[in-house]
Amino acid sequence: MAQIAEEKGIAPEKVLEGIETAIAAAYKRDYGKRGQLVKAKLDPKTGQAKFWQIKLVLSPEMIYSEAELEKLKSSSAPLASGASEDKEELKEGKVRFNPERHIMLDEAQKIKKGIKAGEELEIALESKKDYGRIAAQTAKQVILQKIREAERETILSEYKSKEGEIASGIVQRVEGRNVFIDIGKTLGILPREEQVYGEFYRAGQRLKVYILKVEDTSRGPIVFLSLAYPKLISKLFELEVPEIGQGQVEIKSIAREPGSRSKIALESEAEGVDPVGSAVGQKGTRVMAVINELGGEKIDIIEYSEKPEEFVANSLSPAKVLEVKILPKGKALCIVPEDQLSLAIGKDGQNVRLAAKLTGWKIDVRPPGQEEPEEKEEKEEEKEKAAAEKGKKEKKPKKEKKKDNN
Image (cartoon, rainbow, N blue to C red; front, side, top):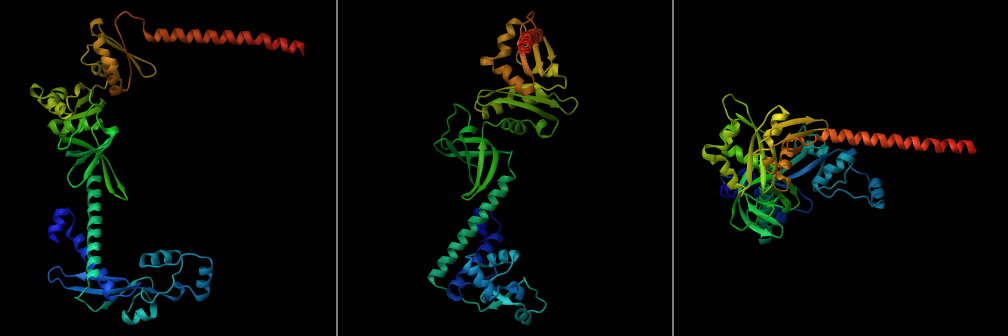
């Protein structure tokens, strides 16, 4: 029992409970009657088992009368056929009396004083030691089933508490678009949409993955993993940078394009701690460890600022920004030198796109001396207003002509 509990990672009490259920099923198979509910208690020290028959105590008003049973039969309504069904039926109304499962209140009180209707009565049964092959097979199946159920519950509760954490795993196999990763007690699924575009995975490859969510299904708990989720970066930095783990440096926001580039904004919560320097590490060791874990994905570390102008300017790193103008409707105009324009925008607009995601501002990058976008917007709005007014004036005379004709 101790060995099974250790191998499967379940509590020894659960294993004992499974064995007791199995012995009770074997006893009922060889010595019980149909409809009986048998309970077993095993002493782990001596190996001796004791047995009881469980009966539900009923009062007369809890039982269907003959007339009511006839009505139910004619209406083809289902009747209770087991212990759990009896309790469900009692919640709704009455049950059909079965002498193997039920006992009347007056009879039950002769055996155990003070017992009430709706309670369960335990009647001791003679212990048996000899069981047939079929009973032994039944017990074996029950034990396996109970251990599987306990294992499922353990996996579900353990990984449910680990949602949003990082786990180390080994790629077990690749099936179609899904990658199955061994993360300890179970296999996690890395779906196609959570994989990094352009990356290929092979059996035996070691990965650090983000536990996205855990779902309980009829086939058991399924652990969904991710390599594309932005929080994977924050968790990797927490592992590599003690200042982040201790709360001296806070991660304010992350913008990520998986496999290509990421931006992370940091703020110092303690005096004298440089957020960017602590994340980069001596000679870039800390940030390089994260980059290697992400397969060479570029990471820009930016200092967070409460001032939007400073934060937007920092977000366009490595480009240098001359001036930032905050405009209405969540827009920000960034003036950058001519030679820094392509660097600020980035390849296919990636740098400015990530900066916009990081800051939450719509960023417009322009060289010095160009017309400001707000002036263009004002001119466009003036043109629209003029066109609308012109349209109204043209419509009015037509209405007057109609009135004259009438």
